Image 1: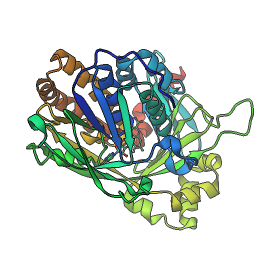
Image 2: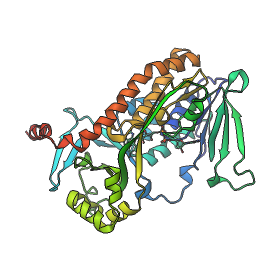
Image 3: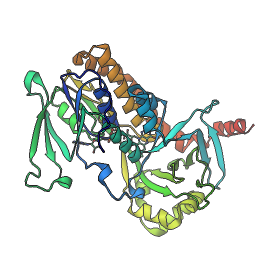
Length: 409
Ligand code: FAD
């Protein structure tokens, strides 16, 4: 895409490298470009817009964008936020599916409050398109951060990248490239290499915990009717709660739903034959099987990746004014509160506010960020973990039966 240049603020002389062009890295790039910094983004994958085929069943994850995330997008640029979120679908409540196929709607609030469904890959591409509008943002694909130290001028970070094999086709394959920046923002996800490197220079507390929960993506196609493309209520987050395991489905703009099965590893791995999968799904999720298709359920269960869920937390998030980590790199949480990305977006908003407050004196801004942000992040990681019981179990209890009667009244 050719650059449709946006008016930039007074350029600053400092250069920032952002590691990871996922959702949070892209927002960080847009935000720091808006502050006047010269931004270079490094991403180890190829540009997703170059890919000709996308296997929806395997690659799609739907996210709920909440007010927290929207506020952060709006803070960068309202018009950009409107463009990026134009295809969100509001989910104004939950729809609980019981074993007999009865559905119960539970609104999130009295005033039409909603969380909003969007495809993660689509949102990422929309954000990458926004980067192309800025002349002071450059994106380098196919480069993987391998090492970082602070041996540059005035203790500046030096970062070392390996050209990833996928896009390498020259003799330089795997050659290490080194760059120096005034500061680095690590937005390279739950298994962050930036965080790992930072730990060599900072006395960082760090914890990582795998949940006994595995997830598998499934897909509910649009309905056959030309008039009404959704097979389920489009403005609900659908949940099939079965206590120790559950199925959920979030709507897509094209009438399909992205569905996810969550369950303990031993249960999920024990479903290793066609017969066992059919028996399990027909017993527990009969109405969902009718929507997904029996063969598709079997295929998904036996061939789609079985993914793990990891919680990480750390403190502090920065080294002086030279490096800071945001998003999943700093706090990866289980997805049951729908706040991982929203929280990562909020990290960027809070960080930018502090940079402005400290008049671009980065060490003070980064230090204050670490000290003030930790409590909020730890709280949301705990809330996310507790919400698994809420979604898979509590929604089946008496409290909800009473709510159901009140909603119906
Ligand atoms: P990532 O999305 O992981 O991006 C990191 C990027 O860094 C990637 O592009 C990666 O290729 C790149 N990278 C990694 N290592 C390197 C390296 N060494 N060098 C260069 N580049 C590198 N959140 C919500 O807010 N709402 C939801 O409803 C929600 N639902 C979810 C459902 C599921 C099933 C899951 C698994 C997560 C969900 N989340 C949700 C969480 C959300 O997906 C994450 O919080 C979000 O994607 C984190 O974004 P990020 O940019 O920090 O990290």
